[in-house]
Amino acid sequence: MGEVQDLSNVPTDVLLCDTFTQVPEDGNAVYLLLTRTQLFIQSLSAASAGSTQTTFYLSDCISCRSFRGKDPKDIGGYCKVIFYPLRGMLGATSYRQRISRTFRTEASRDREQNLNLAKTWAQKICQLSYEQDHPPLLPSPARFLVLLNPRGGTGKAFTLFETHVMPMLTEANAHFTLLVTERPNQARELVQEQDLSSWDAIVVMSGDGLMFEVINGLMERSDWAKAIKTPLSILPGGSGNGLAASINHYSGHQQVTGTKLLTNCAFILCKGYPGPLDIVSITTASQQRIFSFLSLAWGFISDVDIESEKYRFMGYARFSVGTLVRLTALRTYRGRLSYLQSEEMGSALNIPDASNSGNNSSSDSMEPQLLEDSLLVPLDQPVPSHWHTIEDQFVLVLALYQSHLGAEHFTAPMVKGPGDGNIHLFYATSRISRTSLIKLFMAMEKGTHLDQEIPHLTHVPVVAFRIEPSESTGVMTVDGEVIECSPVQGQIHRGLGNIITIGQNT
Image 1 (cartoon, rainbow, N blue to C red):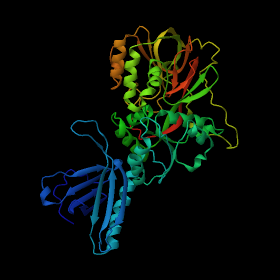
Image 2: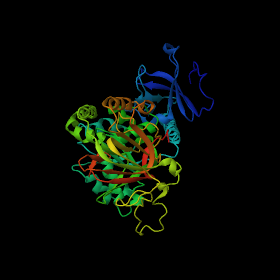
Image 3: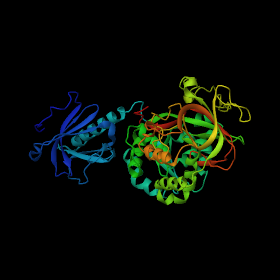
Image 4: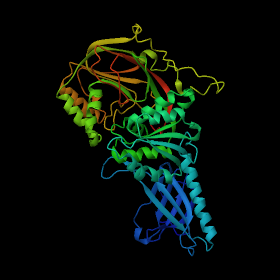
């Protein structure tokens, strides 16, 4: 064992310490120290006399394994550890980046003893990296059903899965079955019929549309109360990616897009755990029941979302182009907006918590009751007298329950987790100017729009709402999917679903 140059910064709670050589770094000798939370690497090379030690947090580790050398004459034992720490260059936005280190030990002339030493390190690193996460991770190895929409966004989801996600899942020893959807509603039908006990989580790689299918398919099962508790995970593979951006935010990451966001979300899948996901129950005038995880939009935002479909080849930039096009011919919509404020419900604390639904049934054979919207009355009746009502000419109405409306739209920065328990209602009347709208959407990228003075834009946290358009000529969307433009209402069900997150902000 070589002499350590300077370990003055290393904690005293060292569990393992040994000398290895780092390969293929010219076989430089290194001194490894392992604590409960960190791996310290100190070079013993004379050439690195002035260098500082390298430190990795075990919470960033997704894999560690031991193995023999390929050469039968090689008596060394090997240990390879893979981290995804947050890194950024020269003040740039940080994101998860893969770092692999391989170490070789030849502490003995006995090949088995060297391998056993490498195994001891690998097993201890795996154990400790698992223990960094609380509540516990999913079962190991985890079993994932991956649903992928190859037509989402710019149509590169399958290639991105192969190049960015599959290697990480393989390194993390996760087992997965990939199903590439071939038509609309295929995922919805599949989760309606699938034996969900075969999987620890359902992973969706697409935009928000495929997750919409999955959640509504789960809620249409006879055992919906149990099925909706199946942990879900989102990997961005579409244009909007609002839920993926929100999960990325809740997990303590900076706002990123493209493959950086994908890598962050894949890391969350490998290292995260199920946490509560709010779901909003929406009822239309035709008595259609829809379950939403992200948003309902009417007016400007839904117009841009749907009309920019022709620019889908541009990826997320389609929304910027669509916004500019729609600003040149701004539309307004007459209607009535009603809502029940969160503060009038004790910040949503008096709403029945749905996080335990499906876990208290006395018999699996019993037919579960339908999910009750206890705050709503039928659409053909007036809203309760204690609700607030505004009748006006609207430019936009947005009900949002996550932090991000899209990958570059940090619309509700006050939301700290997917089980926040509030619907954040934004609306702008026809008195808002085009200049104010431009200011709004530019500031929304960084989430600073609520700190600025934007006349005729209102934000209010609510737990239930109703929208009654005067005419049916506009566009309404739920999670980016078009619905009939007619009277519609919804209420939040706090923690009804489960979604995988690291949850640093929950």
